[in-house]
Image (cartoon, rainbow, N blue to C red):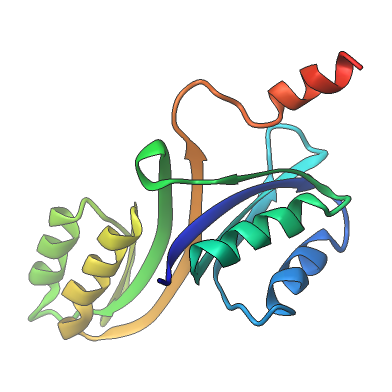
Amino acid sequence: MYRRYVLSVLVENRSGVLSRISGLITRRGFNIDSLTVAETENPAISRMTIVLHCDESVVEQMKKQLEKQVDVKEVAELVEHESVTREHVMVKVAATPENRMSVLSVAEIFRANIVDVAAEAMIIELTGESNKTEAFIETVRPFGILQVVRSGITGLERGAKVPGKDRKKEEASF
């Protein structure tokens, strides 16, 4: 059964890594629903958050393939109740003088921020779980969505565990 999987992949922060990792997935015929990449607290390491819709056997195979890559330091699946995931979205909404207060009310309900106001439009930003960003987009759709941009999902495992720290201890003991 297909479902959403979120993988957090720590990789070397080097040229070409993004292309190699995304190519590994797409060559196997799978679409990447969301992909975010940025430097971590260590400038030599980047975190890739990859969202796939597939079945369990495929995601397990994907994790094994990723772990074999030279530039990959660690692969973790961000399980729903054991992690925190968020998405950032900006929506440009038609905001006429007649509907401006209604648009503002919806933004307030979702705890979204108005980041730009023009005579006939507003840009509203929202950060939250994907179901919240989806609900927000659907709620403002009747006003007239002019543009949408989404960051893709990012996330971290809950608790004090820090990926990669235990591995370094193991490697140092050899």
